[in-house]
Amino acid sequence: MNRKIKLISGNANIELSKKIAEFLGVDLCKVVISRFTDGEIGVRIDENIRGKDIFIIQPTSPPAENLMELLIMVDACYRASAQRITAVVPYYGYARQDRKDQPRVPITAKLVANLITVAGAHRVLALELHAAQIQGFFDIQVDNLFAAPVLFEYIKGKKLQKLTVVSPDVGGIKMSRAVAKRLGANLAIADKRRTAADSSEIMNIIGEVAGSDIVIVDDIISTGGTITQAAGALKKAGAGRIIAAATHPVFAGSALEKLESSPIEEVVVTNSIPFVDTGKCKKINVLDISPLLGEAIRRIHTNESISNLFD
Ligand code: R5P
Image 1 (spheres, protein in one colour):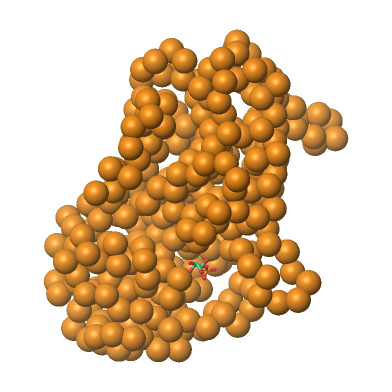
Image 2 (spheres, protein in one colour):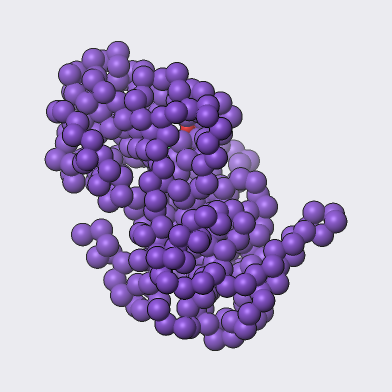
C-alpha cells in the first residue's frame, strides 16, 4: 500500500480498525487519545501526517464521546496539514432523526453532518446509512457502502427452504430487495407503525409467508422491538425458520433479552459497532465487515470505483 495512506483509529471500535489495517497491510497511525481530569478529550497524533491521505475510523455509536472524539481527531489532522481527511464512519449515529416530522424537533442527522464537515473532513465513508438521503446532508463527498453482499454470502450458506426476505418497515424495502434479489427469494413487508420515538407496533405482514423460511433484513437493531415484533407476526402468519440480519448491532436496553426469547433462530450482524458478548443472547453471529471497508478505503485512495463493489 502507498506510504501516503494513514489509518487513524478512535476508541469506538479498535478491533475493527485493526482488522482494516491488517487487510490493507498498513500499521495504525500512532495517536494518543487522553482524558483531562474534567473528562474532556485530548488527541495527539504522534507521527508526521503532513501531506498524507488520512482515514479516521470511528463509528459514532453511543456514548456521544465517540462523535466528539471523531471531531477532535479530524481537527487534529486538519491542523497537522493532512492532505485529505476521510471520516470512516461504519455506524452513523443520530441518523434516525432525519426530518422534522413534528413541531420543535431537531434534525440530528444534518447537525452531525455539519459538525463533521466543519471539523475539517473532506469526505465521508459510511456503511448502511439509515436513509440514503443523509448523503445530501453533507456538502462534502459521501460514499455509502451496503452490507448486503456480506449478509447475502452468509445467508446463502444457510440452505433455507422456500425463502422469503422480509423488510420490517417500508423504509427498509430497498435493502431487503437487494438481499432478496441476490438470493432469488420472495419479498414481504411488515406494516410497522411507530408509537413513540423508541417503540413501534407491527400491524400486518404484506406478502405470502406461510410455509416459508424467513430472513428479516434491517439496518439497525436498537431496542430489538421492530425485529422481534416482526418475527412474532411472521410466526402467527405461518412462517417457518426465522433468521434476522442487520448491519448495526446497537442492542440498546433489553434488546438481547428480547431477541433471546423471540422466535428468531439466529441474529446475524456485522462488527460495525463492537458487540460485547454478555451471554444474554446466544443467537448472535457477528460477520466481519472489515474487508469491505478496507477495500473501499483502498479504492478511495487509488481513485477506483466504489460502486463496482456492489455489481
Ligand atoms: C427504523 O426505521 C430502523 O430501520 C430500524 O427498524 C429501527 O431503528 C430498529 O429499532 P428498534 O430495534 O429499537 O425497534
